Image (cartoon, rainbow, N blue to C red; front, side):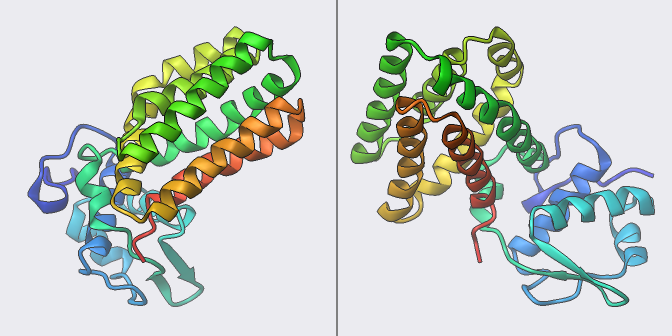
Length: 239
């Protein structure tokens, strides 16, 4: 069986796994209120028919939606919509990329959390200067209403370099395009919000910087993991 070739708003879907495509189709239906918050999703049989997929493919898509806290399952009753993401999330993200973005955040939390831990323990004076400079550049972006994706990338890459382990740098570099796609999405969404949201994101960067300055590896790890997990959750903050 094959999924239909259109995504949210009739846009063509890029090649990807069937479960990822179904994931985004259901997500789009929730975003445009086809499946309102609090409502029960159609049965698995009905959804399989609607999207032209097998039950294992559908169940993988539903599992991802549960992990992203968009739906919840009630034993014996089916799946219910827990919250509605902003339609803007689908507008800003490349077609078919939302599932990839969410999985990239999981990768980043693991890799960059450990890199931040080591950066706190091993950074040199020049490493710290580079990290501070990137945070200050992000301050300027926030003040002037700029997107700040490049500065955000510079900051996170600088922290990986400060770990003094080239494998963290290489692992992150291998995912650079995926990472930039996620940063572009979350920072675009932040620009549509209040100044308070932008300040909150920047405050998370300062928590990481402070921990690295103090050479507190565990605080740096936790700060980085929390920051990236919060970024993942912000994709679905529509209500």
